[in-house]
Image (cartoon, rainbow, N blue to C red; front, top):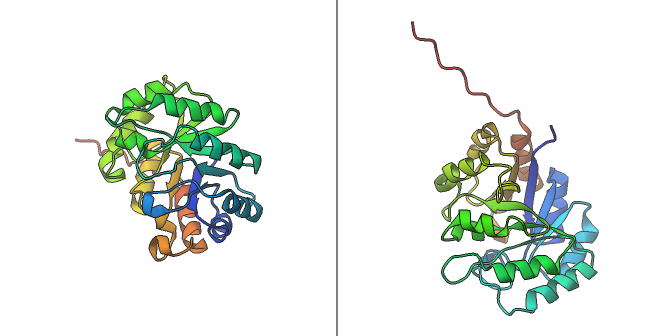
Length: 240
């Protein structure tokens, strides 16, 4: 079995180098974490791409919240990033009622045809996550859902994501679950034991929050934690 995927959020080339040195498998590239992560500039993408050899998933999101914004802006930004070498992305949109904005999501999936992409935590803020999965599950290139199971994070959503993992292989549930959002180190052993194999962190690998860079040592600590053998629950004692 291949080792679990460990994805780290990077805002700069410095972040990217530290994440790679610490053992990250992949980076999610964003800017402006005050808005929960927006699309980085082409220039910043190029600097990070030159700094590391890791796969890079680039956020396609131009405003806070989950509305797509101007219809042509994100496809144009995606085209500019692709011309610079980007080939993996992160996106997903909701309408004002919390349903998936399928037209906008499909249009962007078509704009990045041939690329792999993640439907991000808009899923956790949707009115009906099963409906979202059913609607987008067959879109080309979608291979991952980034989710904690609930807007509040893993503590609140663990039962939800565990139930979704149990449906792996069904339509809408064929994509990998990448756990992120309120993820803490103490969650990892239990999640690994439950069968999860992909983890996503950002602030957890920084010493002083988003105003500080990614810390190589913290990334290495998470790498070791994620790679540790999944614990096996001890059998219940036999009653006599």
